[in-house]
Length: 327
Image (cartoon, rainbow, N blue to C red; front, side, top):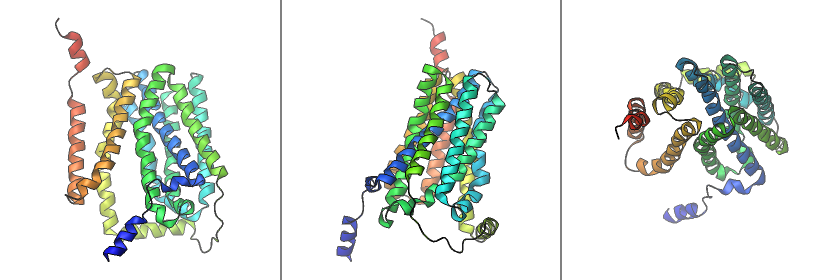
């Protein structure tokens, strides 16, 4: 038993192994670029409203507009990934998002963009992201051998967390240097990179028999959800955490501008720190899992997040304090 286990460990592929394949590497880089562009778009949209002294409720709606589609479209998107050609779905959706990003860039550059149009564009881009996420997960077996699937999943997490660290900081510096319009242009270009990568990928041919129709597959998914209490508990936990936690992302630009007196570059670094923390968490979790249970780890993580959010909300006005200090 121990010899077999040792042999299995010797043949475990490296986490970077999927990148040796040219097709996977191209799609992975395109996805990383798209994720960075998405975070830059979020910072650009929020700072567009901050710079125009919009109401706090309007600024917070940027987060709502980008994430609400995930709530409503996740299940239909999963069904689409199972019932529709995944490459075509990703290709068409990425092309539509590139066109949406380009139109947003043109309107912003022309000075014709208002707050409500911005929220509409943000919602459309959020719909595109929600529709493509399950399809990206579903094509992994077509890109890498079965034994490399865990590595591919880990690399997918890298694209998300690295983009959270790099995208906001990059957007902040671009806004401070050249304004919001180039940020929107970079996001549009990131979708063009995705379109090119998908165009160059030749999906393996396979028979597509006995696929359920969309309505039938959607009904089957809902029936499964009703009969799977474990899955419902996971969803409930996610909602109980994500709903209040989203306030941090929604209101952080307001805290950055009014409480901390930061400009666009400072806000970008502040938001990028969340991504750096996420990367640190990914590196730390395996060690913590050896000493505490998964439930305890979730509770501890929620507590730490809550304390950190309270610190952001209650932090003193340090720049103002230093400015008015005697001597």
